[in-house]
Amino acid sequence: MYRSRAGLELAWIPRSRPRARATTANLLKMLDCLGVMCAVVHGPCVEDFESSETVDFFIVVNNEEKAKAVIAWMNKMTRDFERGTGKLLNFRVVTLAELRELEPGELDQTLGSGIQVAGRLDRELVLRELKEPHVMVTVDTTFMKVRERLKLAKYLFGSEEVVVRGARAYKITREGLVDKVGGVRLSDNSFVVPRDRAGEVLKALDEKGLRYFAREVFLSQRDLRQLRTRSR
Image: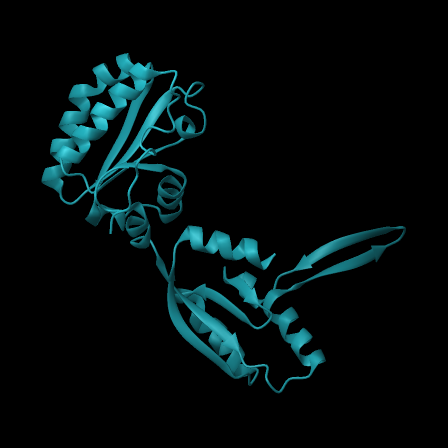
């Protein structure tokens, strides 16, 4: 899968900096010639090129031999790049096999917030490699009364309660079952939890005699952030 990046490769560099744009364009052209799978520019330079001190690249290649070639070339041209852009060059080169060993949250943030500037493998496919197994659970509330559904939601997702002590009132949050295992609420009767914690959740539902449906899904850290935002 490949999406056209026309106009995006250099959009983060002001047009008032033609030398910086030309220097970066030459670098990107060479990265494509070297056959990198995906190259993303990220960090402060993407948001504000002028005030940033560095240009940060994250580069994915298909094997160790290719990684050595790309690293050698990047080191060789660093001085010219820094002279042409007026910025320090930072870069990281990893193989596809190494992606699974990297911290998912950090890597997801790097690829998710950056701009793809080279490579034939779309960064969305790289992000897909970072997805971790979760279990999506939906509790059957078809025959439950309203009061029972509210009680279930409180059990699963916790609640906010006001406690009065003397002349003062305090709002406290009580965690529910899903919160305790690091899960995310989807609706009043459905949620996702990490696969390695799903067993204890399903056991608790069984003990309460609840009927439910469960299936495995794969989610990245970015997916989870979006789900948490929607559930608020």
